[in-house]
Amino acid sequence: MADVTDAAFRHIIAKYGKPDVMWTEFVSADGLALAPEEGKRKLLLDLKYSESERPIVAQFFTSSPEHMRLAAQLAASLGFDGVDINMGCPDKGVEKQGAGAALMKNPKLARELIRAAKEGAPSLPISIKTRIGWNSPELETWLLEILKENPAVVTIHARTRKEMSKVPARWEFVKRAVEIRNQNQCPTLILGNGDVKDIDDAKKKVEETGCDGVMLGRAIFGNPWLFSRGKRSGLENEDLRPGIEERLAVLVEHIKLFDELLGGVKNFSIMKKHFKAYISGFDGAADLRGKLMETESATEAVEILCKYN
Image 1 (tube, rainbow, N blue to C red):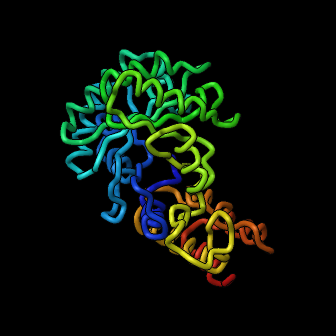
Image 2 (tube, rainbow, N blue to C red):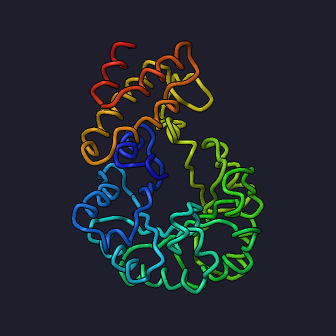
């Protein structure tokens, strides 16, 4: 997730509840190819990772096969374990570039991008993140086009582009994607995505749809313990988050890591979107969040949190 699962947060997730595979935020392949050195330096921060995060997949967006090839080549040189092409983001700025969800209207170009990624990183698995269609479900045509290029993985966000995230995810279409894959005897793995609450919910959806795995996004927000089911004890809530004392301690750790890895390049306000996610469900939470939202630096925020503890 853009400005959420950055290098600092992924490091925290890897420490407190590591999933099977991690993806970076999506990065502009056009920017990596065309931006001046200062711009490239900032973009490369989004591709910064620690060894503890492996296996980790670099995610890109573009409508240029040449830039996709170069981005995949870069990912391979940086030691990533895979390359992912975003073909589902509904952001209007991304779509104006012909990238993200706009590629669902241009399957010919989408296939060219997959081939370009394979050329740039022939030793890495190439995956796709997409949706079930543009205005209405189009898996019968859209997914078939992607599968012709035999990507390693296709992650299906179970909504159309038109639906954004305004309606419940329709997991029956993930099941249909699996059926289409099987009918065409493709080796591609199908992952489902959308409205998955926790690991138990993910396992249930795998059983119901036959998909090969589940990608969780929003559920991890403020909850780096999400993937730790069965690895921890003494957790107080059904979402497996620990008590407030430990939550605040990890938030302090998260803030300091953000400042260490990204401070000076990324604005501290990005960190503020995590405050509500970490700080909720206890007396005084709203007041504490309010104070933190007024801070302008990592030092200020840490000072407030340490005084609260």
